[in-house]
Length: 426
Ligand code: BJ8
Image (cartoon, rainbow, N blue to C red):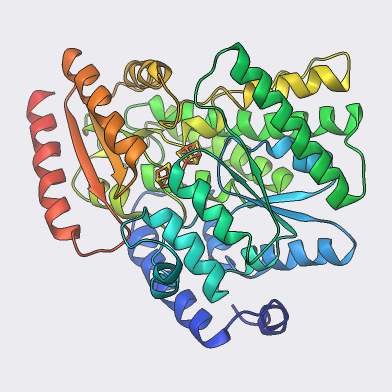
């Protein structure tokens, strides 16, 4: 990725460590992604995005900032992207899926905290993520305790605005959430020096719904047997959704959708028909956390759906576009952004309903319940997931892991045995 050194230096990136990071990412990508067979041609664009991961898009963000634009970093799908766009800004998802700056992160955080939190804190403290360094504001939320308290520390290093996400979805919680949405609007207006208007919010909703529709279409094409795209490639697209340019990304996903439709017509898939079909549910997989899908799909299974924030939770709901006033549109945004079923909520029966629906619609043979180490909400909620699936006779495998590859061999053995069991059942 030549030609970006000046930009990285201006952002305060440590070039030597950064080079090493990009090199290891490049070889991981080759091993996990480029080694796959029968990939759709439309994946070329997403390969290109990864090859430019800290290059072209970061340059675009900084060109935008030079013209007075503001970049806002987020960590959770409850933070409404619509509001950032409506204020004339650009958002980027900053959750990270690789072990970076662990020693620095552990100097300010407990060792036994979830790797996702440790990773974004490590990136900030080592200044190895040009996206982080390109943000004018970070918007955190009070979802899990680990994140909530980490944002207090993060505010020593960058401007942070924290949204209070309720823990229930009753009338009072909806009122609180609408008030939080309005507080964020005020903060974004102050940052951007621009008002969020009825027109700008309506346009932002329209743009994001177009992106969500493209992702939904892509996801639904995976109902085919054989599916026309691997779970690994689908996950990559969902990960890139958090930081790529909205219109370009939507166009590329739609073009890929056309290709996948054609593949289905011709019976072309990434596995043989009848290969065991998996649903993954649990904690999000931030880029470049590809460990579980890699292990599953090199064990003879194919992932056909993800009940994850890097999956269905991100795009299954659209925001209502109709509204007679700015207030009504803000209510629509607040409703849409209280709809996903994160384990931080109680009770969280909606998540089980989503899992059940996905199992039926995607003809799932078995479920992997994926929990990042030390993620209490998902680790504890696994009990409900397992009980529910067992009652329905759906096989489930719990995988609790972090970002290291130390347990890869052991996990592979467990996943292979699970896939073999599914194969014999079907
Ligand atoms: S809506 S899943 S993006 S909070 S993995 S940091 S929960 S200890 S990422 Fe999440 Fe929003 Fe929920 Fe989705 Fe905490 Fe668990 Fe870590 Fe997590």
